[in-house]
Length: 329
Image 1: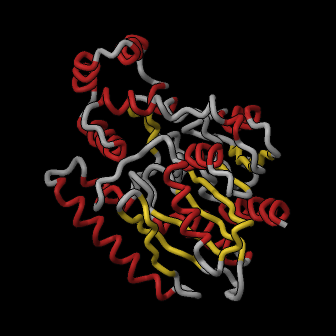
Image 2 (image 1 turned 120 degrees about the vertical axis):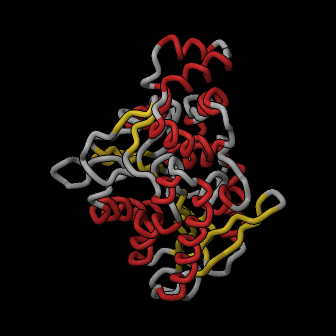
């Protein structure tokens, strides 16, 4: 998610704005420091949970023979069943990011909130070797199973919100998981691959299209400078591939054009000005949806433009939760 107005730099289709701090170790003299550094960060996060008001509860969510690590945030009213907002992270954020992008706002509005490290994210990636998957409904359905098992969750008022690349995963999930009452994509993402392939020269795109792996990987290895290569390696890891070709080919599967029409729940899409990763796709998603829908534009004058509205989370929360209150009422 962006943190400044600089245009960012292109990494063969990827515009990089913010990388989690440990990623800077990727291209250092000793990249093995990455995991211990991440473990220190995660340990600090766990130690902070009892200090929140009310305390944040660590949870484990059964998932395909293992468990996903997450947290449950209780709303201002702790008695009885409450509406639940499930937060889905993006491609490189932390659970702490989800406190800023929805968790704190949910608390103030009286919602319970559940967020977790899914495949390719945080604990699931670094400790469990679980990788991104395009069929995110296979992740969200177990999360919903866990949510409705709790006495403090209203099973008829479960909302799902995706941040950054989570904007793709949320749409994919609600196309198949029908227990979700409302969904939010920040921003709308129809085709994840465009942020990877947009800057590939046509000859490289042809190599990718025709399956010429050796040539594609060979050209990429020659063209990438060390800094770009280390950043791209960091971005590739959550997909579970070590080759450039394998990753780029896999990303092509992250496309919702054929399933967006299956979405039935009310849907809110944010449309920030100066969106860097998937420009124009919020409006494209809006046009594809046939369910009740709303698109909310954020402008520079709002102070909430750029990818995921990083400088305007307050106004973002105001508009998102006003819509969510009305939709779930």
